[in-house]
Length: 63
Image (cartoon, rainbow, N blue to C red):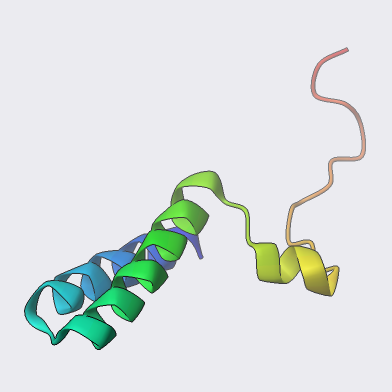
């Protein structure tokens, strides 16, 4: 999902650079969020819905 977010963010940013002002602003905002999501690995929408796709380990990695 993180790679998909980065690819989608890049695509939207390129789209925003060639479109009319309103759609360009919306596409740039969406691109910024997708970049954030792809780099940080955190999704506010998943958080608000209570979804967690992180793998939980049975024991601590560092003891």
